[in-house]
Image (cartoon, rainbow, N blue to C red; front, side, top):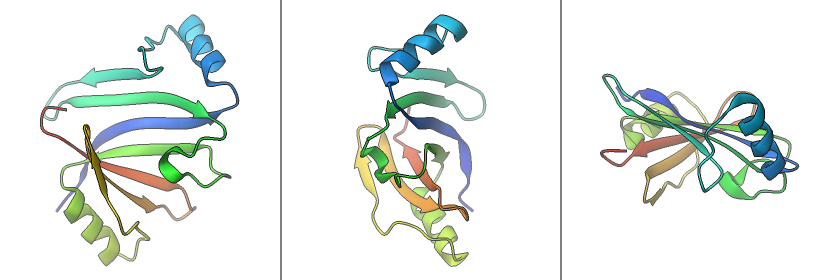
Length: 125
């Protein structure tokens, strides 16, 4: 059975992403990278990273519905099997997947209509 192995990222809309990043640096000491994200690497039985990142409020990234402010990315160990399991359980899933330098991605929607991103990282990510 495929399963989630961690949270790959927390992404959200912001009216002013740069100012919000600066606030988090100043008040919480978050280590923002050159691309404007916080990447936290973790180890253990399954190692990887979690990304934190604000996006402009009018972003078209991730095909978010305009009324939704957050998207959580879940790391999965087998994207294809996870999508089959979700479809078999009657969960609404996107028909397409895509791949980039970070791995393979798919999407589904939770019962409240939140778009959920599923990410199978490339080995070593």
